[in-house]
Amino acid sequence: MTAIDGFTLDLPDSPANRTEFGGPTDGAFPQVRCVAHAEVGTRALIDAAFGPYSVGEQTLTRDLIGDDGAQQTVSELFCLATTMLDPTAAPMEEIPALYRQRWEGETAIGAIKTTLRGDITVRLRSHQPDGVRQEVWALLCVYQALCELIADAAATPTRPSNTTSAEHWRTTA
Image (cartoon, rainbow, N blue to C red):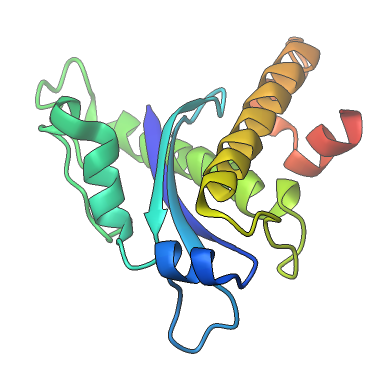
């Protein structure tokens, strides 16, 4: 099972960043809008997309899943949509557990938004759009490396990798 979630990152207020990425009309800083696609069990990243603040999460998600996601629904609703119609392959009593697992993805992507980035006063450093793109990919690479590190460290019968916190990841690294 996978999940896609979006977030924004504050950027330095340079003319180049303001022109390329924009931001909220009442915001002090330009922002880059990101969406990340993660596997919910391992919390490993599958892919990510980002662009100007004015581009919505649904648009970035459609760009992210492309033709492979033709059977998927992009929605602002927090619900479980499935094409699994065979009750023997997907018994109704198992479906609520899938919804709970979806929140594992939310937690994983939340680690990128908060724990790795730092508190809400932390901005990316680059004053140029190409540098911003590089920093976003670097942040996602660090997340993925920490995800693999903690999965290896937590691969014991008594502690599955999805029970460790992002704060624990950062401290361990």
